[in-house]
Length: 125
Image 1 (cartoon, rainbow, N blue to C red):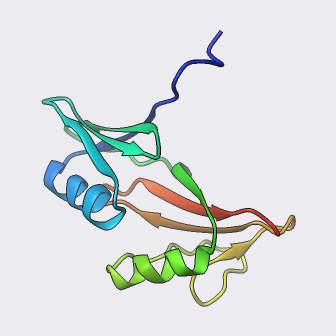
Image 2: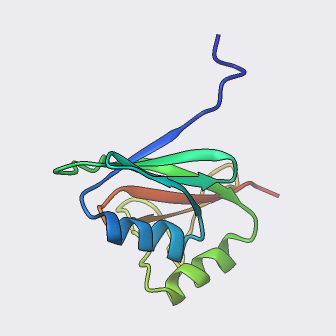
Protein backbone atom coordinates (compact mmCIF):
# COMPACT_ATOMS: atom_id res chain seq x y z
CA UNK A 1 0.00 0.00 0.00
CA UNK A 2 2.66 2.57 0.97
CA UNK A 3 5.78 1.04 -0.56
CA UNK A 4 5.80 3.66 -3.35
CA UNK A 5 4.85 6.60 -1.14
CA UNK A 6 7.40 9.17 0.04
CA UNK A 7 8.34 8.84 3.69
CA UNK A 8 8.25 12.00 5.81
CA UNK A 9 10.05 12.41 9.12
CA UNK A 10 8.78 14.59 11.98
CA UNK A 11 10.24 16.47 14.93
CA UNK A 12 8.67 19.25 16.97
CA UNK A 13 9.96 22.72 17.79
CA UNK A 14 8.96 25.60 20.03
CA UNK A 15 11.71 27.91 18.70
CA UNK A 16 11.57 28.27 14.93
CA UNK A 17 14.69 30.43 14.72
CA UNK A 18 16.83 28.00 16.75
CA UNK A 19 15.41 25.04 14.83
CA UNK A 20 16.21 26.61 11.47
CA UNK A 21 19.69 27.65 12.61
CA UNK A 22 20.38 24.07 13.73
CA UNK A 23 18.94 22.01 10.87
CA UNK A 24 19.95 24.44 8.12
CA UNK A 25 23.07 26.07 9.58
CA UNK A 26 24.61 23.22 11.59
CA UNK A 27 23.37 20.10 9.79
CA UNK A 28 23.32 21.71 6.34
CA UNK A 29 19.77 20.75 5.33
CA UNK A 30 17.99 22.94 2.78
CA UNK A 31 14.69 24.54 3.78
CA UNK A 32 11.88 23.43 1.46
CA UNK A 33 9.23 25.64 3.04
CA UNK A 34 8.39 27.67 6.12
CA UNK A 35 4.67 27.78 6.90
CA UNK A 36 2.79 28.92 9.99
CA UNK A 37 2.62 25.23 10.99
CA UNK A 38 6.05 23.80 10.17
CA UNK A 39 9.53 24.24 8.82
CA UNK A 40 10.22 21.59 6.21
CA UNK A 41 13.78 20.55 5.38
CA UNK A 42 15.14 18.33 2.61
CA UNK A 43 16.96 15.44 4.26
CA UNK A 44 18.48 13.87 1.13
CA UNK A 45 15.08 13.53 -0.54
CA UNK A 46 13.12 12.82 2.63
CA UNK A 47 11.06 15.74 3.92
CA UNK A 48 11.89 16.44 7.56
CA UNK A 49 8.98 18.38 8.99
CA UNK A 50 9.69 20.41 12.15
CA UNK A 51 6.21 21.03 13.50
CA UNK A 52 5.75 24.39 15.25
CA UNK A 53 4.18 23.61 18.62
CA UNK A 54 3.55 25.26 22.00
CA UNK A 55 5.50 22.63 23.97
CA UNK A 56 7.79 19.74 23.07
CA UNK A 57 7.88 16.43 24.93
CA UNK A 58 11.04 14.84 23.50
CA UNK A 59 10.97 11.07 23.25
CA UNK A 60 13.61 9.24 25.32
CA UNK A 61 14.82 7.49 22.16
CA UNK A 62 16.07 8.48 18.70
CA UNK A 63 13.54 10.57 16.79
CA UNK A 64 15.53 10.92 13.55
CA UNK A 65 18.80 9.36 12.42
CA UNK A 66 21.12 9.38 9.46
CA UNK A 67 23.28 6.60 8.02
CA UNK A 68 26.73 8.00 7.30
CA UNK A 69 30.21 6.92 6.33
CA UNK A 70 33.23 8.03 8.37
CA UNK A 71 31.17 8.72 11.49
CA UNK A 72 34.17 10.10 13.40
CA UNK A 73 34.59 12.95 10.92
CA UNK A 74 30.90 13.85 11.28
CA UNK A 75 31.23 13.80 15.07
CA UNK A 76 34.27 16.07 14.89
CA UNK A 77 32.43 18.46 12.57
CA UNK A 78 29.42 18.60 14.90
CA UNK A 79 31.66 19.09 17.94
CA UNK A 80 33.43 21.98 16.16
CA UNK A 81 29.99 23.59 15.79
CA UNK A 82 29.33 23.22 19.53
CA UNK A 83 27.17 20.09 19.41
CA UNK A 84 27.76 17.73 22.35
CA UNK A 85 27.34 14.00 21.92
CA UNK A 86 25.04 12.24 24.36
CA UNK A 87 26.28 9.50 26.67
CA UNK A 88 24.18 6.64 27.96
CA UNK A 89 24.78 4.49 31.02
CA UNK A 90 25.50 0.90 30.09
CA UNK A 91 26.95 1.68 26.66
CA UNK A 92 30.71 1.65 26.20
CA UNK A 93 31.19 4.81 24.15
CA UNK A 94 34.61 6.03 23.05
CA UNK A 95 36.05 9.47 23.84
CA UNK A 96 33.97 11.01 21.04
CA UNK A 97 30.75 9.37 22.27
CA UNK A 98 30.65 6.70 19.56
CA UNK A 99 29.23 3.32 20.58
CA UNK A 100 30.04 0.18 18.58
CA UNK A 101 27.19 -2.32 18.44
CA UNK A 102 27.82 -6.05 18.84
CA UNK A 103 27.31 -6.31 15.06
CA UNK A 104 29.98 -3.69 14.33
CA UNK A 105 27.83 -0.67 13.47
CA UNK A 106 28.91 2.61 15.06
CA UNK A 107 26.31 4.97 16.56
CA UNK A 108 26.37 8.40 18.16
CA UNK A 109 23.55 10.54 19.54
CA UNK A 110 23.00 14.27 20.01
CA UNK A 111 20.12 16.67 20.66
CA UNK A 112 18.53 19.32 18.51
CA UNK A 113 17.63 22.64 20.22
CA UNK A 114 14.28 21.24 21.40
CA UNK A 115 15.80 18.13 22.98
CA UNK A 116 14.81 15.70 20.22
CA UNK A 117 17.38 12.89 20.09
CA UNK A 118 19.11 12.54 16.73
CA UNK A 119 21.65 9.92 15.72
CA UNK A 120 24.29 9.03 13.18
CA UNK A 121 25.01 5.40 12.30
CA UNK A 122 27.90 3.97 10.31
CA UNK A 123 27.26 0.48 8.93
CA UNK A 124 29.78 -2.23 9.80
CA UNK A 125 32.66 -2.85 7.39
